[in-house]
Picture: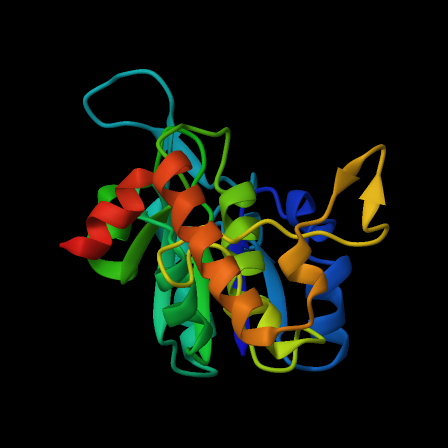
Length: 228
């Protein structure tokens, strides 16, 4: 899989994309991640990528020309399955969305910034918009990193245990069940007996019941959407 990220502040992305699971995936050659500095595609000597909004108002707007130039340059080399814009009013990132993205071969992520982007970028250049939550951040770099992390860990071969991703929260519209490790008893607090029984069927039954119970208590909306 190849992921190209377009950013006005690429330095913000280097650290989160060069450690832990993502770094191992890159080292294994399972994913290629390239970060492109939008300023490199500016059309003036000041490397400008933003300007005042027509009609007035507070805040600067990302210009269409640099964005168009970098996307066109990338598309000369390969076809892209998706060109994503990180936006607070985009489609909410869910586990199902991450699953779908993990099956794609090449994607571009445009990290939003300033007051937003020229609407023509949204109308003609991007193919989808994604939000990581109903709040506003200083820029789209952190959402881009979140999207990459959620997607890359799902690529076959990235995690040491292939079942690990399948048992994550939200995979079945349920939260993950409680997990425990050694010691079996600490300060009088004991691990549930069923987990020490060695009886696989009973353990799986307990885990499913716990997932349903936790989801109903903490995120009841997930169960409601499943019923619909």
